[in-house]
Amino acid sequence: MTTPGLPREDITAAMAARRELGPDYDDAFIETVVDRIEQALDARAAAAPRPRPAPAPRYGADAGAGRDHSLAMAVLSLLAAIPLSAIGVVNAGLPGLLLVIAGIVLVNFTYTFRPRR
Image (cartoon, rainbow, N blue to C red; front, side):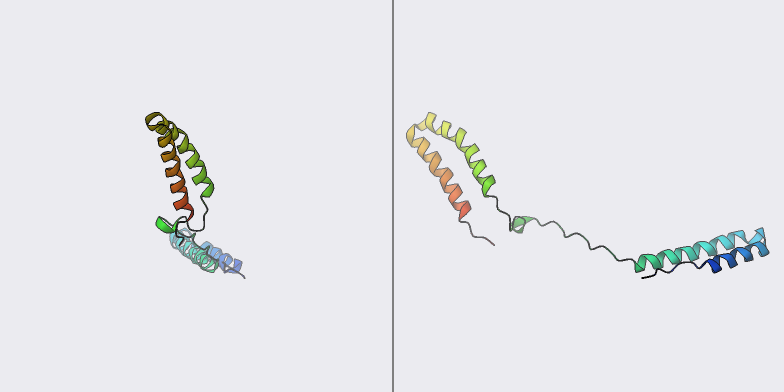
C-alpha cells in the first residue's frame, strides 16, 4: 500500500514561485507548505493500521476465572496451621489442636468444591 505524500514537482514549483514573488510573500508561502505537509501526514495517519486496544482488566467475581489458586491455598493453609495449632494446644490441649485442624480442613474443602462460574 502506498501512502500519499508531497510530490517533489509540487515542492519544486512552490520554491520557484517563492523566488519569483520575493520575500514579501514568505509567510503565505510557509503557511501553504505547512498546510500541505499536515494534509500529507493526516492522510498517512488515516491509512496506517490502528493497533487494537488492550482489553480492560477485569475486577470482581470474574477476575480469577480460569486461574487455579490451589497451590497458594495449600501454602497459606500450612502457614496458618502452625501458629493456630500452637494456640489451640496451649489453650485447650488435644481438643484445641483437633478443632484447629478440622477448621483448616473445612476451609480447604469448601475452597476445593466451591461452585465455579
